[in-house]
Image (tube, rainbow, N blue to C red; front, side, top):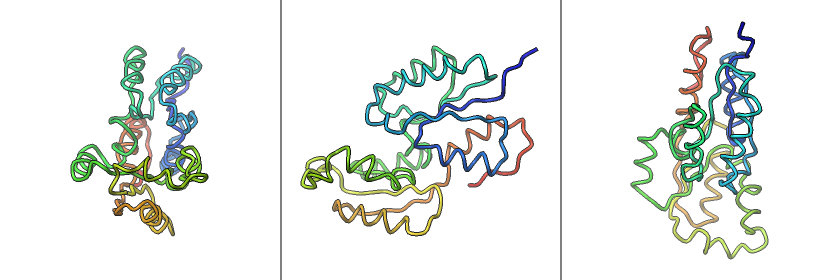
Amino acid sequence: MDTRRGTLVIACGALAREIAALRRANDWSALEVRCLPAELHNRPERIAPAVRAEIARHREHYAKIFVAYGDCGTGGALDALLREEGIERLPGAHCYEFFATPKVFEALADSEPGTFYLTDFLLKNFERLVVRPLGLDRHPELKDEYFRNYRRLVYLAQAVKPGSIERARAIATAFGFSFEYRYTGYGELGARLRTLTASEDSPAWPA
């Protein structure tokens, strides 16, 4: 008798709120989630080893494992690991692509290669994940060097939240970028998680 549990999603911590919202909205009780620290994005060479360790830790306990990461700067190392393990991940290079969907993201990138993208998570944690790690709180003059090739900020919003557009626009203004807002919802994240739970009788997930 197979005593393993349902599906485990090994996810980037930057997706924790969105995955939790989808689980609650759809009552996906058989879907369990383990999130790795979002700060791994500052050291992408550590992502694949961290995912490997989580797979080894949990594989015998779950009937299926799915990885909620893009390539996220691993240079193909994550895909090589997942091919070896026979595990799927979200499509695309990063969360901007699977939130916006590949077609829309390609159009955005083509229209302005020098684009800085914000998601809800990155907007909320901008000081912690961008300003302080780059030392901009101590040396604000460095932003002109770090971001000299950027011209536009695009805010890809997963949910409608009071004040979010204004905060994103303020960041764009502070950095001298033009500003664009796109409501994406959960994009490919929601669609892919739904396929993992397709055997369950659950209500429709939010767009």
